[in-house]
Figure 1 (spheres, rainbow, N blue to C red):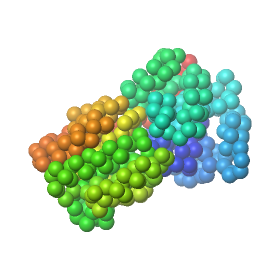
Figure 2: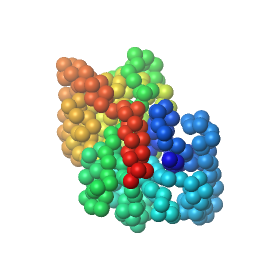
Figure 3: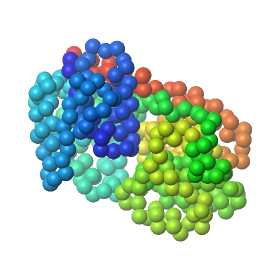
Length: 368
């Protein structure tokens, strides 16, 4: 039984699907299975056995990316005598013989559900290809019940082949008493933390409004830390940021190394995530794994992931967001309660458990 995982997200991004793919491969390598897993990617490292890594480099000249995706990679897959191909980024796989079974991992449907929040070429490609991809897939793995519902609503033919498996909690993200990392950004002041790419779906302009209301109402010294890279359609956010009356209390941390994330999560008064839509919300689980209370949107998968370990708000209502911020800084009993519940809720999400269930579904598929 030979399974090939298309692992390009390891090499071409640093956001959610990168961490998903890295954790999937790291933990798959540890489990006992009779399946023979290979990965295909752009460059080699030690995440997987060297003899199980197939390297297909990417060259920057016109049309090569399409040639690589639609021609070169399918040829490599056929040459390997692959039984199953897994696409962690849900865009593909393409041009495979019918005997090779396709597994598509669906993280969310935001380009379909909220096209205006994405770049034009991204939403266009999804509209052209996604329904065909879902129909051709032998198995569709989703990360939440909410994503499963969205997939089935969009493509009813996917209903009988969609399987939900909850993502895991990164083993390296756990509570630490070391406050050295946050002190670099905060000089010891209390703070709220957001992590994620700065792009419209994360709804950060509304968070800026909420933070202004919070500061005006409470007069408290809390800072707002935003840890993440600049993404697409972010001009409106940066314009509002520069005009913000409490600009000096807002810190853009940029990309933060993973080894520094436990410190940032652990010492935040609360993790705040005003996203309009999430397929799962990995940063929520990371924050909960550090015992950090979470303030979350009441939309999409976030109540499913946060459970009773969070306060929820309407992401389009800055006043509600601000009210939740005020509650968590003024009510120590609530803070302690949510911190305890966060640690318990985080225990429900395990990468070892994810990979065992993933492997089981793959092995079931090969027998059909």
